[in-house]
Image (cartoon, rainbow, N blue to C red):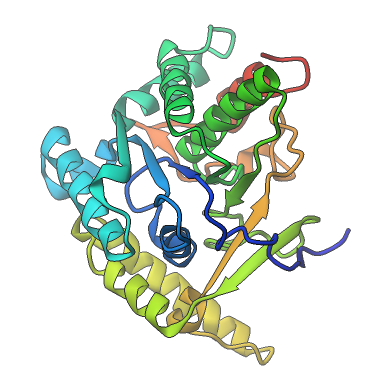
Length: 307
């Protein structure tokens, strides 16, 4: 099997004045790609449109806040942070789907795998489809299909389905780029090294990296998650040092990856076993399993012959 291959950036992808639509699952998903998004915001065209599918209320219990106020705080965090890289509030859309509702639907589907797909999933698709129609983008960006987080995969499936349907109707071909987030073995915000695919990579300038670090301190609701990420990178950097490739958070944050949409088998796990997907995701103790949830969404929405 070939390893992932770093290839030159597509001509003008970050610099030419195009209309870009970025579809993310929840607030703070923008942080790992601050460099990419800042370049899109300064390419001479209208700044990119950024859509957040969920309201981020899933971790409200950690802050001892009610879901509503907690979601409002997360919305304010991302709005302020994106302003640092030149993306104004007018360029943001918050679809406000409750993570608590989505996880309850996932758990229910997992418990009854023969049941119809939850209606809320179709509402997610319809809302994303409407954002696509309103933005009329030349290029679409979304989270990678990685089996790392169910809401990331649901967001990916919704926008890919919407783009495919729009392209069929208009006889066009809209480029879609995947942004890596969670990967097996603690590989954060990178495509797996053994992936057989082309991967594009940018190295941030000093001002871009400074802006990214400024954004890093603008998510108080995510302090625990960011703290765990810092520890993960510190550990990974020390382990890499054993083979002469030591790195720290500064050097890790200075590199961002993206890739053209791969030819995924959406009804199959991206790992050797679907039990490796969403390993720590559950709803009130009920584990969220890919083969009973997003595999069914992928089969219904995106597998060959669906739609």
